[in-house]
Image (cartoon, rainbow over all chains, first blue to last red; front, side, top):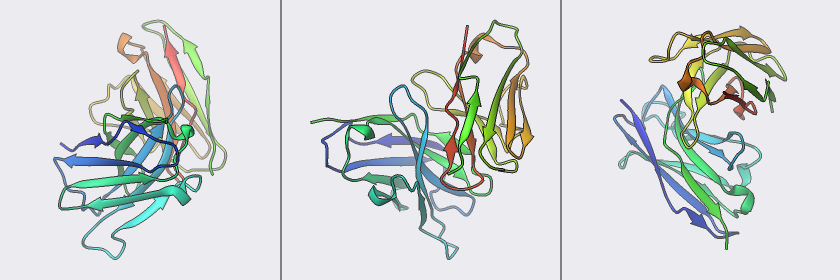
Amino acid sequence: QVQLQESGPGLVKPSETLSLTCTVSGGSVSSDTYYWSWIRQPPGKGLEWIGYIHYSGSTAYSGNTDYNPSLKSRVTISVDTSRKQFSLHLSSVTAADTAVYYCARVQRMTGWCDPWGQGTLVTVSS
Amino acid sequence: DIQMTQSPSSLSASVGDRVTITCRASQTISSYLNWYQQKPGKAPKLLIYTASNLQSGVPSRFSGSGSGTDFTLTISTLQPEDFAYYYCQQTSTTPLTFGGGTRVEI
């Protein structure tokens, strides 16, 4: 059974880069069937998709990413297959980036997200 | 972006009630619509995928229907553990977008 776990700093200063890692257990990040995604939820608000990465050692689309246009200029998602991890980097953060950040597995054909990590709260404050 | 509008934003119900939540997409999304349940302090949990398919392990009192732009999540007989937030999500095109959520409270 695949499980995901987020890790990273809980406090980031304004203008700096938010960096989080999601560790995948019970499965491989190299997959033809699944993408790996980041989703966030500001306190008391709804869910916002940040982006995802598709990594498969067997296809020409390996390493492809897709980002929410509202964040695209500041977001990078990458994969480390040796560590079974994927990462989120969000640059030039402001207080508006304060949120619980979730990682999730996305089914490639239908887009449903399951499972999710437990989430990690990142606060942007000086 | 495809906008997802859920209604109602909140509802009050009792154990045993039948509850219906609707989700409308700003353009047609075929059946690329998923439903999630979220409890306070927890990650969302997938309930229904591609509009009407019950995720493994989810009780059969949950059901989904619809296609195109209009979708419905129904809880046939509300149980105490069902009091939570519910979100729809379209996965027809990126950016993936979620509805604003529906709070189901006692």
